[in-house]
Amino acid sequence: MLLIYSHQITSRLRYTAKQLFGTILGIEIKLTSEVSDFVKHQGPKMSYAKHPLGSEFFVKSHDLLFEQGINDHSIKTFKWKELSCFFQTTDQSKIPFDFLAASFYLLSRYEEYLPHLKDHHGRFPAKDSIAFSEDFLKRPIVDAWAYAFLELLLEAFPNLERKKRSYSYQPLIDVSSSHKYKYKGFIRGFFGFFKDLFGLKMKQLFNRVVVVFGFKRDPYDNFNFLKLVHKPYGVKPYIFFLFGKYGTYDKNISPYRRSFQHLIKSVADDAIVGVELSYESFSSINRMKYEWMNLSSVIHRQIKSVRMRFNRIEIPNTYSDFAELGIRRDYSMGYTHQPGFRAGTCTPFNFYDIHLELMHPVKVYPFAIQDYSLLKEKSVLDCVKRMRELYDAVKEVDGEFRVLFSNELLGSKMKLNWKLLYEQQLEQFHV
Image (cartoon, rainbow, N blue to C red; front, side):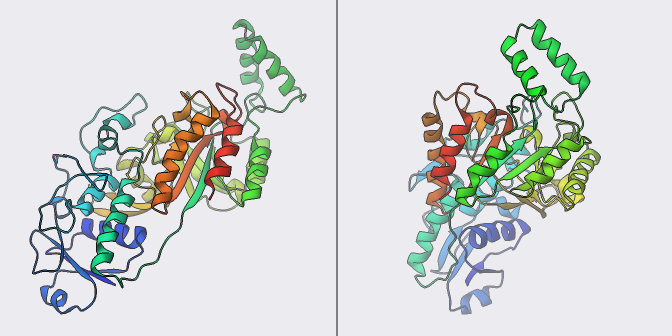
């Protein structure tokens, strides 16, 4: 057990210490603000404050974990052990920056509370993040900081006990449209037919006709492929079905169609089913509840995992809504068109609400890359190389590597063979 002294034990400090020491490093900790308890402790211990108490293992603290609300902190990065760092400290500190405060800044998505321009879908742009501007987005920097700090800690306390974690791989599949042509209903099929006809899209028109009349499998019907491709590796994917009403950005099959509900039930036998909350649910907690509860009723058990359509997260409102509804697992933390770690970590973490100064029961499962960020690549090999950079960074910290693919791209031959890419990345990165 590691005893940590601080002059003030705040909810921010508890939250960050639990994530870094407990979850990432597997070290049991105890926090204290009593100097006498710290002095008489005979085991491993460190102080986290403005000044050391004596000659103990000391980490100089930044103000961030002892504040309330939002302040516009100046961020200046520098390199330490080839890692980008910020919140620099003094020579007295065993580590040259306050890695607890820096980690909280990223995990809480502090910068997303600050004024910024959202993109046309109402999202925080990747290019506005400190991780992108300072070129550490493609590394789970919070985990890397923790592991680098662990080396210093073990030098001081070689007998410090910890539970080591191991690397894991988790594929996520978005099903915002389960079929391209089938089961869309007469009206949508009718207009789709004439749109292809008058647009002179003869190849698409031919495919539409042969699929609708049963002569060819629908290009988005990838569910048997997904079942078979994972089986040799013993990997269960998370498959998120869009279960909302038809809208501008939500064009899946009607959730009331029996064929669609039957499909979801059959997929639930070999995968973990989650719900992709619709575009419109972003601004409606009632619609979130409706979609989540209705999909749960289809598979006759509560859906535990959700994603937001287009990764539309508004900090902290989206997670406040989840907490109110009883949703406990979110898989939206990442950027659609930019590979990397939006919250600076590959490790699941509970969301911390800065407005309320409390940790929500909602656990966030960050993903490293979405297939749409690979659209500019010229070949499957180039895509795998791009993914390997992220895989290596996660593997280095024994982390959790989540990749997100969409059912539409898997059923598409746009630019490259997406199914072949999926097979190759699964083979290479599942261990």
